[in-house]
Each structure stands twice: as structure tokens, then as C-alpha cells.
Image (cartoon, rainbow, N blue to C red; front, side, top):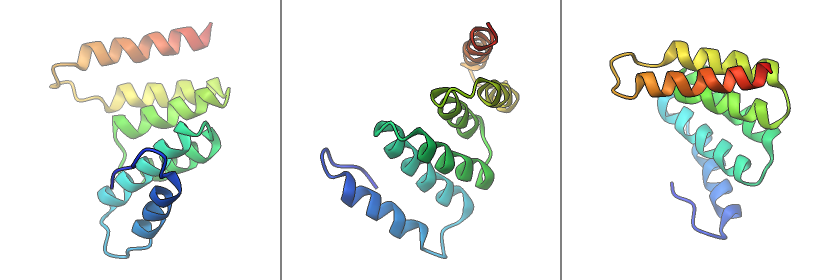
Length: 116
């Protein structure tokens, strides 16, 4: 599923149709919700993005889904929940990943800035 420029209506319909498929496993369904959230985020519909990202996080929790939820909360001005999900992002990071320290530092800095 890839979005063609200017064809957001068709893309959104394709995502909705995909989510109706009872054969999707949870990780694949989570990816569809991430795509749905990304489309909403691009439209600056942060409430819809948050809903989609939270569904993805419920189905397949990861550092990626936690950070997306955090970004949406931050865009909505809910710094308390943004901080909570950025902390969750850090907890879910894979310490064996070569970018672990950089990713951890990035989210620690976001938390620090939101805390004032």
C-alpha cells in the first residue's frame, strides 16, 4: 500500500478495506494503522492520527508505535501523555541496535524540553 500524490481519498479507502480483512495478523494490521495514522498526521488531523497510532500500539507494541503516539500527543498539546510515551519509547528501544544511544538521547532531550 503506497499513497500516490494527490490520491489520498483512494489511499484512505484502501486502508479501510485492508482493515476489514479478517485474515490480517496483528503486526500487519498494526502497519495498516500506522499508515492510516501517517495519512492523518500529514493532513494535520492529529486526533485521528493519535487514534490510529494507539490502535497500532495495542496490536504490536514497539518503540516505533510508542514514539508515533508521543508525537501525536505532542501535536495535540498534551505534553504529559507525550512524555509518558517518549519514556515508553526509550524502554522499548533495542539496546543492541547501533543507534540505541542516539535514539535514547533524542527522546531524553524531547522529554527534557517538554518538562520545561
